[in-house]
Length: 426
Image (cartoon, rainbow, N blue to C red):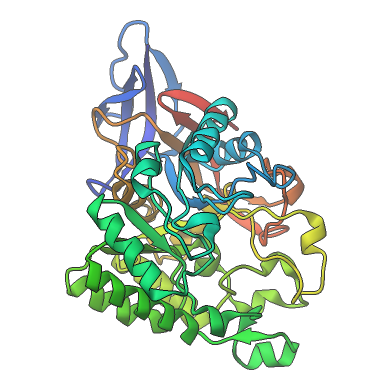
C-alpha cells in the first residue's frame, strides 16, 4: 500500500532539511521525498494533505516508565502507548525500574510480549544492570541482550560500589552493550527534595547541592575511562557537570548524555507553593542551570532530550512536598514543551528533532529518527504554532501528574504513524 503526504514542511535532522515538500510511504517504509509540495500521485495511493504542517521523524523517548509489571494502576502499556501516539512518540525506550525489576530474560520476554499486545507504538525495553537493581550482583547481560534489551540501567538506583560498577562496565564493553546511569552521588542526594540555595531555605525544604551530580558524573566517567565502555548519562541538569562531560568527549570516550524536558523548560521557582507535580528527580534547578542546559543541547554537548515519563498516582503526590513521590508524566507534553525553545529562538526544529529522534535512535542502534528512503515510516505531523491550554484530565496517561497543567502551550500533534500505519489523528 502506498501513502502520499503532501503540502508539508519536512524536518529531517539527519540531513539538516527544513523545507516544503511531500513524502511517499510504501509497505511501512519511506520510499521517497519530493521537493514539490503537491507532486503527481501514484495510481491508487492514499493521499493525505498536510495543510502546511510540519512532518518529522517520530520521537524516540529514552527513559519511559511503564507500570507493568507491578504498578499497572499508575500506567499500563496500553495507556502509555496511547499517550505516546498522541505526543508524537513512536518509539518508547522503557526503564527497568518495575516491580519486580526487569533483570532476567523471562521478565524481559514478558514485558516485550505485553507491549506488543497492548501498544501501537514501538517499545524497546532496557534491562536492569544488577539483580533487583540492588547494586550487588551483575545480571546476565549477554542473555538479556539476546532477549532484546537495548541498554542496561539500574535507573535512579546508583551503584555505590565502584568495583561492582566497573565490572558491569567491563562486561558490557565485551558485549558492545550500552550502560545508562543516573549521575547523583547518593550520600549527598539522600533526602533532598529541592536544589540547595536561597529559595530552598526560604521554603524550608531539605535540599541537595548541585555538586552531587558533578561528583556522580566524575566518578562514572573515571570508570568509563578505565573500562572504555559505552556510557550514557540519563539526566544532566547542572552547569557544573558540563565541563566533565566535555573533557570526556575530547578524550575520545564513548559517552553521551541526556536531559529531561522538565529541566530544560522549568526551574526551581516553579515549585512555588509546594506544588508536588513539580517534584522530579533530580530536583528542578536554578534558572542559570536551565539556560546552561539549553545551550548544551544547542551545541550538541548534551545529545538527547527525553520526557523521563514517570507516572504517579494521586495518593503519592497529594502529600507534603518532602514526602511526595518524585516524577511527572511527559509523553504527551514532550513536544509542545520543547517547542517553547523553538518559539523562544533557542533551538531550531532541526536541532529539536536531532535531540528527540535522531540522536537517541543512533545511540541505541535503531533505524528510526530520520526521513530517508528505506527508513521506517515512523512520523509525526504537527502544527508548531497551534496554541492550547493543557488540561491534565484530557491526557491519555492513566496518571495525570503533569507540571504543565493549566499552562499555555504552543504546538499540537496532528497525526502519528508507526511503520506507515496511522496510530493517532487529532
